[in-house]
Length: 498
Image (tube, rainbow, N blue to C red; front, side):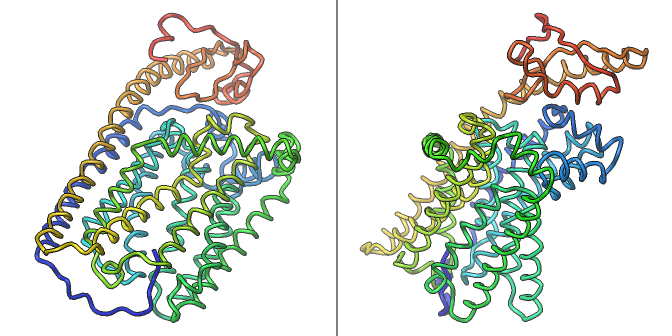
């Protein structure tokens, strides 16, 4: 949101502002209840995919073994290794608690980010309005994906693609809040630490951050207030430089070199790969644009725009707003395409169906929708309506329409989440029964255990493609402390719910 240097006092303290803010806070109960429901379903989460490999490493070797695995063998993501160790050290309990803990942290960070943006723009809004915007963004980001399980419940994917963009927003909070020399120094230090950490955590989020900060530098002459322009430019440049440093450490690691060789990453810049990546990103964009619950972000922005007070809130959108919006869209398109380019050699056409890969730039898309909602409200306010009664009536109608969209979006996500919860419960029951059987056999001295794949939300299981795809069979054997596992075809009982 653009920040103006001049800030005439806000005298439009209307009597309905307080009750309207309370109504916004009451509306926020719905997405918050949806998040609570999603967190409650996490009790059915069980290890799968990469988790089979992570838990034995942490169990047997601790943090140093996890860091060594990532840096020397897997992908070089040192910060990723630390986050994986933080939940994998608790075994199966860490799997179950990851979603509610990370979901609560992301909600808190996005709420604080919304408040910091309003503070930097010299705008005021009821706490309920900020909470509504943050909670709607959180539920849409975490639960609006076609594969919510991998986005929200699967820790291995969340620490790589879901959590990083929210951490990037959190790193901006001290910058937006700093008002003293000491505060600015601490904010700049936070930016540097966060930038290096993001570079060592997620290549895709690093690309998005660099694109956003580069666009911010390009439009800084118009978007940044003159009094803080140099400081904000310094923070933006420091953010880009620190991310690049983190990426260089990652890129030169033995693990990253091994991954590039194994996945033929050198082909990403060939004409065929670039063209295929463009087609894939076009399909991703079409899928995201036609996912109607994301309109809930626009609706939350409309309500926020109706309630904010301050000089900016009274102005009609102008050239600066168009510049900021255009820069945001450019950053989204460029970073989204580049993210598709670097992941295409690994996933191929799977980049279109591996929806967790979208999350690195999906949060930016949802935040832009909120901004679009506030611009829509400001445009409505600026229209020359004949009387105060008419203006108030139009505002009430707009608020009712926006609230309806928020409710419908949450109801749709609740229905989808309920179906997923039923599948997760069935999967957990089958997983627990097989886990007990395999532990009993291992305790009795067996070194070869039969394993029945238990499929859920496209999670990777061994013995795919008629037994040719073995991974992660060796990790499952390590998990149970045996030599190997064999394929046990599913029975009619184990097929239920999958």
